[in-house]
Image 1 (cartoon, rainbow, N blue to C red):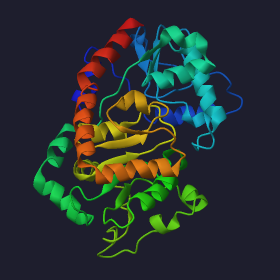
Image 2: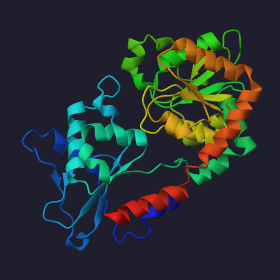
Image 3: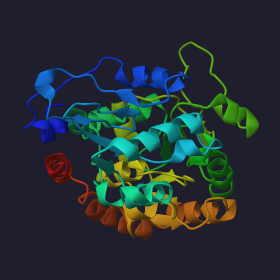
Length: 347
């Protein structure tokens, strides 16, 4: 945890507001409170920096407090891809533009999306790429063969004999097309697609995916997929299980429709797993030429063709594995810490 916040080494005060984001959410929904939430901080913090990890509707009134906000993406503006109220999210974006002294965007894609709405923010928005958020202790633990084997046995899997997806099971992640493409690509093969993450049940019902995400009975076999299933949902997995499953997968499949950054492909490359992902939004910016890119993630046949190539071609997987290692090295904690510190110092 200390390494994760090393960029705060020079901070004199770390002022944590319990449930701060929930407080802002309530404030945003009150119709009579049209202005952003006023920051009332102790007098000794005058001249300091108020830093957020996502857009908040806040302003500094009569205080010498600088505001630095983080922008991950503008996906909540699309009601078809996100459950947050687009109007409320736009209110936060407007406050971010009107009252922030600096804005940290996690990708050029997110920066450019913001500037379509608020071009006046151009001089205040800086792109800082984020590193893989995995805990160093868990990374080391997941490298142990005995730990990896235990996780594989839990889910009835063999190293290199499955493909993996991890993340939310929702429309934006394109899971229905991924499942359809995989059943085509892996036909006749005992190489399952393993899915892990929280399920949007409404999405599953709308896309008729119930057979893949039905709740399992409790008991000895609860949570254990059947060995012959071509698509296996393993539920919400722990961070350690995720890392072990990434390390041993044939490939990570991530044909998402929209990402502000896209952590899973970068995680996979960090741990030597070949990646298939979409050539849209921020994803080509993050993976560059180190992944198999799907030009049209709405095209099931194109996704299926890419999956089959990864299943059949060992040389392709080895090439992507080596390229992935090189690409992941760009996103170091050291670079992140230095750039965030420089951004805070600049306001």
